[in-house]
Image (cartoon, helix red, strand yellow):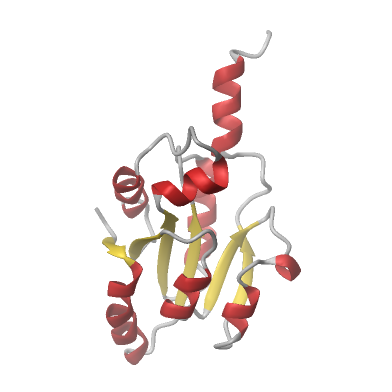
Length: 162
């Protein structure tokens, strides 16, 4: 694994304080990352260019169920964290139980919050938490043509006709 997994984001505060003391900036990307796909890889790759340190925060299993439905996640949190930690460019992986990443942002105080291209920077739910400490939003990755939800729907529907 290339990244350090710190399951509780509160425990990550001290490590990020040391990183900042060494002059490094911090980017935070968050999401479910259920069924890792090329869109996730491209998002992480682009997010890596936004700061010196990249933290990826994953919704815990209960939070994914709340956001996506009772049949999600397909991959349990510990495994999702391990897979994301193996991606090039990720420095830390953590998790959060809340519906949004507001509490993570307030605790970790990222310089940059990275969101996918399906998001509008003016309607990011965590914008106020980010602005409170002077952080900025970066829209990264490729056009949203890939998602775990689409992969799951395609699998349930069956193969596309020839």
